[in-house]
Length: 214
Image (cartoon, helix red, strand yellow):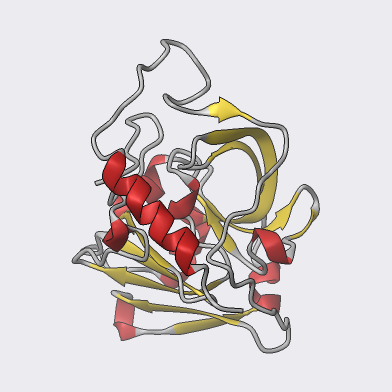
């Protein structure tokens, strides 16, 4: 299935039109500025929802790691790592918020202890099976203890439409900053803007600062 080119160009146009525009924050509100609450968990992607074979899928981890190591985790390897469950709100840059989504996976702090990145890493670059990529500063990954590599949604394995077999969940950032269909992550010192970041989207994406577009 090809990428949704009209959808992508439309999102680029929105980024240009709404660059620098902000909404007034409501003190004490659970809802970030410019967001509205919905009941369903909507699906947004680039038009490609890749197949997943648990026997052949691998997560590659590379870049600034101790001993210049590279890792390839099988799906079984991922499931054997002690899991963490979280409940978190999900905020999409398109302005909707879904409260209290339940995820299960590997806490980021636990994963870092396994792969042991070098002290000088500053950004994590995520790569997806559908050709998507996105960048996240180190401080954002370490800021929220709820940051996880998720493989379950609401008590069941991640379905195709929500990014099987693995996706990043970083609750204080907009949803596009956590890649679905994850296939590789790279620890780097210099930033490498990803798919939407090179198309007018903010390099960080903090929901409370309303960092939607650059």
